[in-house]
Image (cartoon, rainbow over all chains, first blue to last red; front, side, top):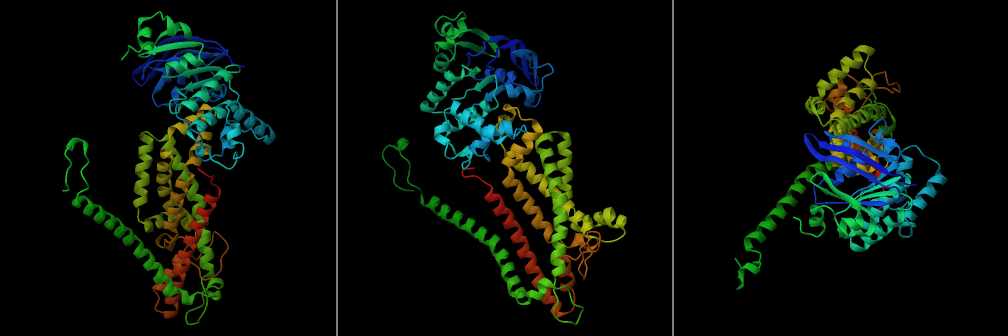
Length: 252
Length: 293
């Protein structure tokens, strides 16, 4: 089951440059939350703070409090442990090129010492089903490299890989930005189903996508969270003038 | 210049004669440079076959050298000795070189890395005979006698900088996104480096290892006062050991025609062995690679 996310007074920096300013947000469990805003406004930085991916960049640092369920992300939890509970799907599909489709999905378990062949088979099967890729790859699980799939398939493979470690939260950083409308449709449909089991936070440039998949939407601008509310409200009756300008396309 | 149509801004002029000639000339030059690189290689190989094939027979491949004046004999002990010395060199040099490459690429994007990079490049330029002297000081002086181990250490030292720098370059080519994918599913950093980054770069890293291996396989100078050479069979790694390159050197500077012929044969065997080793590794790697990877 998914868990909620609480963020309090979050500030993020790249060296001396501050990228996020005092972000406060509560994400509900088993819902999809979309983050919108112009390029460079800090959406990606924000979700990379939720699974401590931000700190893999040299000189990047974070202040403030993030809780995933009851787990305090920045106090005493190892980043590796945390990331098993908070999965991530990236903007550009990044399957492991030297691994088969099967090994890509099983990687998170295998590389952490999980060896039970039968259970691995089951997890791979379930994860590929959940990401709606099973029928397309079931005959070449061991024969083909993950990199040999099409772009949309690769992205669904990456979703399966993230699901295989059974996370509670799934972070998606513009997962459809490199995909055609048909693949995008498949992934949106998937997000819809995944919500039942996972808490989803999705960064998107596509406002229609936010409106289609998310119950809640946050609007970022210049490193600040301008408004966070029900998606419907953000798109029909936003409280802030800047949000209104952005969603009506009057911006920039 | 060719004719132009009446709407200049929308038309693409036909390719001029000058550009077509340039195209052909440049293509010709690239073909020529390829030939310039390949011709010496094939010439050397053909000449080796021509000079050496006549002296290769069962005895050459199975017997030890005969004393001066006696005909026959072979370089079997040197063939095995070379393999032992190169095995020791690879056992020491490959892990150390790859380890240093991993440090440089994954942890050495700072001042410490710069120091290692600089030292490694300097080491790469040290004359091989000097490295032989170092191994003499490190191993031979302590053991009090020449040995295959000392020869292996000398060659390993020569392999390290090449392997380290190519490994570093190959790992840097692996996109950051691949590392992030592994972090994102809760794989620790060291595990990511070994099982994801290094694995993704495998074919490039192996190219580096093969380059280093082939380069040291023919080295003679660093073995002169480390492995030393041996006219007899020796299976112990702490005893003076024959090596093909040493045997070729000894025979080539001797005044005897029979030894000259055997030197040519030894050189041919050495080249064939290097090519076979490199090819075997390549085939093994390709065998383990998936479709579309």
